[in-house]
Length: 344
Ligand code: SF4
Image (cartoon, rainbow, N blue to C red; front, side, top):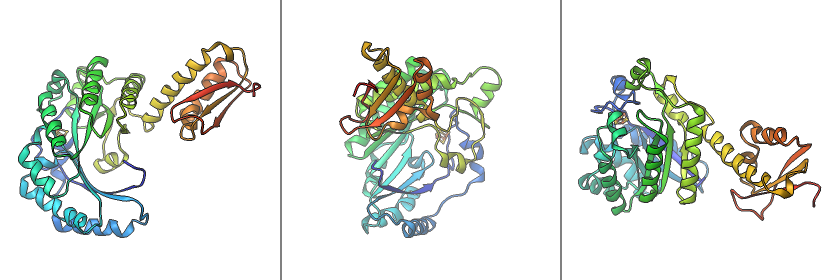
């Protein structure tokens, strides 16, 4: 998960996905897609490799698009072979794919492990069985646990994806999912707020008034609790919100829901607003009008907040004459100290 990672993305259409998960439009647009051949894939990899200029970067071939291990084994082999060869030749470092929890078993794992797959991302979405059923996922929380244990037994890196605001979700069911994820100790997590997308089951339920998406405020507040919990457990959250490539590639049509292009920034803004507030609550700065907030070099934009909203918020709330943000290497990422500016 280093910053120095170059990704060669390969999009695998969900040909023949037998499921119809409430939030997903793959089934209904699958007819428009075609299969990718091994030969094409070789060429794609070579083309990408010729454009990568950062020679310090580790290079990963990543198969996007759902249920890789749901493909017939021959098909999986054909797709993995070009990546495997590139890995054997030292041209790439990692191979990643994503799949459903119930498409993981020992046979599949031993095959793809031999073909160099180093990371598997599971689309879990929720570990609450009722939520899984309501959203037509077609797998249970037990399937998730089994898949997690098998992948870990193979020493393959594990990523888990969860959603916030599915049909039947409450803050409690989401907290339950976060807790289960932490217990399983994945190598990384992705969090997606549920958006109502055109041509999905959720869209129908939304139009009937049966499904009501969470509002932005609620998914920020729940996302905040989730991110804090994963941070505390030292589990990297590598993505919060829709990925732009997904939107572009799949031509997603957003019908309703808490979509925001800067979702993660909004969550981090609130986390830092809380931190700053706790500092302001301390007696010794309560009456000062000139304030300086010290933070680690990674954090000034989070301290200031999305579109400087934290800065504006505190300036207004405490009628400050000035609020400065200064970097110091005395503080770790996430730590901050608030002082009266006239003190030093
Ligand atoms: S989320 Fe995955 S499993 Fe569910 S319908 Fe979409 S492609 Fe199929």
